[in-house]
Length: 338
Image (tube, rainbow, N blue to C red; front, side, top):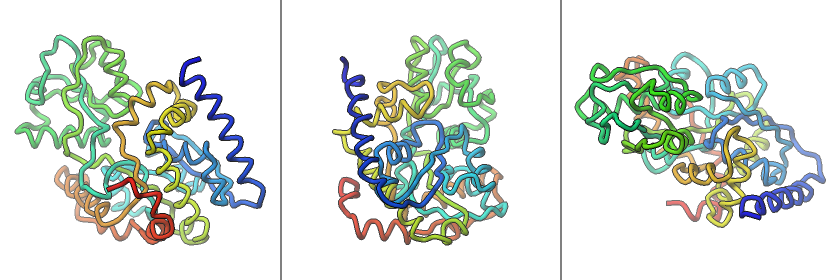
């Protein structure tokens, strides 16, 4: 029996024990949204390891393929909390949607205005693309309007190029790997797990660049104001559970178990693939001054690209009071972080 198969037995057993130990009293219902990729690992671990239940929550996890689908479900009242990337969320906020971010979901935004190690560009063999400069004149696949698109445009700008120097084709995330494999593009801008999947699937492909500090591939978890403040005790329990789950997720000794959990939530992901992709992702539940800086940096880029008209104050979105309380009561959950 390999380590992942034996690990699966352990996961099922320990999860059953966790849930049995924490569901013997009345709990508060909550519906938590997550994206169907490794970005949602904090939510998946919180549910599977019983952290939601431990903190008094009867949680249902709703998985959607895109951030826009999660936002639609949130506004319809189908879910209570959902994530959204800082590279497109400000556009929705400027248009009038009211949200309050209460806990981190993805990325190292607490310490840096840029955090993009989980995004990269993979090139087909025979294209001659070995460096960023080699992208000039090539056909590049990227999902228009996504963080990956913002990443590409900032990368080009900071390397003396513009969109006009490449042929940019709209390729949605489910088709990233197949389009590269069939030669529909010379290179693709993708994020995990598609970066690793492309390198595995397309023989002879190469990683042109990973990260580089161009954008903040970051997200927070938010709810509509009525949801956040109507039951502050529930919101605090949610933030506590997310924080404890993130701490568990970062602990190297839990890597095998975490990989198995991820494979159960993300379609097409094996435990091995989860393990190889999550190492490129930062899971930090904290939000604070650095998060506000990352938010402002994203807004600045969006204004420059004419996707927003003017600056948006991150204080209108971020509410750090819940995570501040968590950190004060449970500093041990954050001791491994800078």
